[in-house]
Amino acid sequence: MSGKSGFHFCIKPTKRSQYGACWRLFMLTAFDIAVGILVLISALLATARGLTREVLSLVTWAGAAAFAAYMFFYQPQIAQEFVADELWANIATVVVSFIVALIVLHLLTMKIGDFITDSKLGPLDRTLGFVFGALRGILIAVVVVIFADWLVGANPPNLPWYGEAQSLPTLRSLGDGLISLLPENLEEQVNDLLQGGGPVEELGDAAVGTELPPEPIEQTTPQAPAAPAV
Image (cartoon, rainbow, N blue to C red; front, side, top):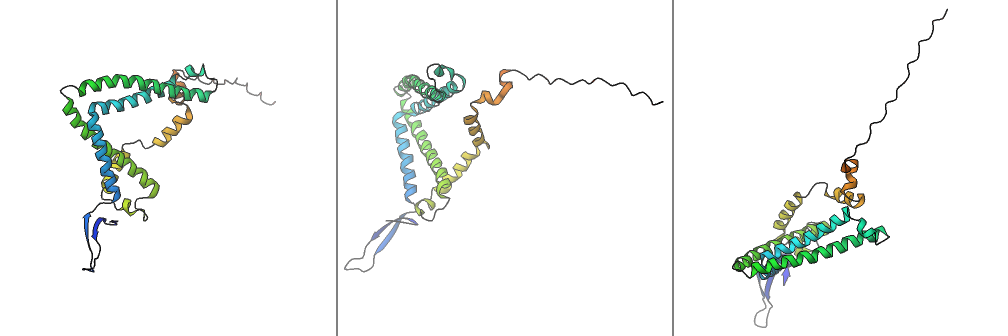
């Protein structure tokens, strides 16, 4: 069974002995075990695929997202020629651009990954893939802890399996380091990007290399001095 201090193994009292016995097997909670399983599964999957395929997979998704963002911010008029509604035109631009780029990049990276995995570097590639997968699993656990602390608090009384987890201090420390790498005004930048319509509009006239003409200076005609009274 499990308790506040971790998992226990107990023997119930019998007819010969009225006393039971319990042994504490681990100072771990269910959350610790879940984190360990997550890291192990991620490491095994990355070992089967190899480091090259894992890295190229990330490059494929990031490249497809970057291409979709480029088409949304700088080439929205292409879809607007075929779709009258601006909102649906923007959605079509992002979705179609992302899918097309994802397919093309996947075909390219798949050839590269197969070549390296089948070569003499295959065993080394799989070993490095295990390390990469373990680090990826830890990163996923760190992100889960960041959102969990935001939702339920640092030490929720009704969730002892989470608040008393042995891995929690380490994951929180890694999470603090990850958050410190983000820009301080990240939320404002994202809101401006979503509401402003792109970086070109934020730059204004400076983005297109034009300058506003200086305002004309009003010139006043000097008045003649009044004649002295006689």
